[in-house]
Length: 170
Image (cartoon, rainbow, N blue to C red; front, side):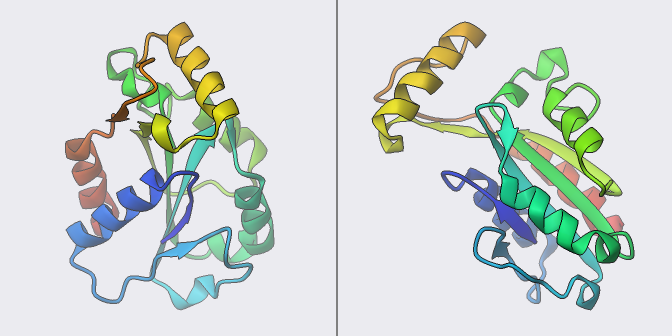
């Protein structure tokens, strides 16, 4: 399992999935800290990445470019973590309804076997001043939490559990 996370929610989701899988031999690595992984040494690969200001981190795309041949040879899954996915009633928490996933699939040479979209978390007190103001502005526009003294977790853990079951059966 590899992750690209800004404040740690994507990593938290991957650790939850690993626990659900009851896998003692599951490696979890930060994509920002590892340039190379022997992808073919694993039965399955799960990559999780978060959205910030409408974009996935460039390190994700660099990793995929470097390992595209290997990723096509193993069972793979991808999860996209973003605040828009909190709008489940609008299907923003589905691969088809997530503009971020659709953009990713157009830009990426890798197309995973399984895709999950999960709502992330707001950690206002942890953000730098600029990020705090910008994210608050975006949340105001989209009807989200604007109280900068709060931390709010939007992740639907039942949905993550269902994804874990699908990933286990791959």
